[in-house]
Image 1 (tube, one colour):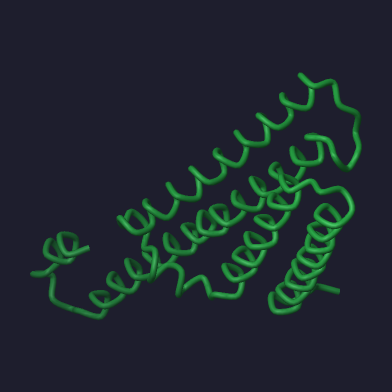
Image 2: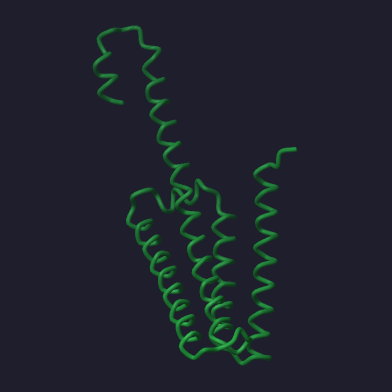
Length: 171
């Protein structure tokens, strides 16, 4: 039994909502029980980034192609911001891991290791935002190929051999 694209989207959105709920519970646990504000902020950022990833999947690919056309400045700027965010969150995660190792902490709720996990998750979800837009590029290339084929089909019905060179020049 093959799943339709719409049912896959609903399954994906359900999983995203479950991730958001579980990370939000983690935010409250790290604030109330452990007073670990680094971990709470990392998981809160992950919740926001999961919501943005879900939004990127809700928006149709054609709309994303129009808004962020391949090679446009807006697409390049968006991808640069996502890349900087991913690398920034990953850098903070590595700092927190190193800090936990330097202090020889145990894996407890108060340790920097939980904060490392939180910011690594934030980096992961930031990457998925950019990956969604990257996958849309394939759809845009297919649209361009389809338009080129339609242009060729426009001139196939012409009987006159005079325009054969011009047909090739137009396409």
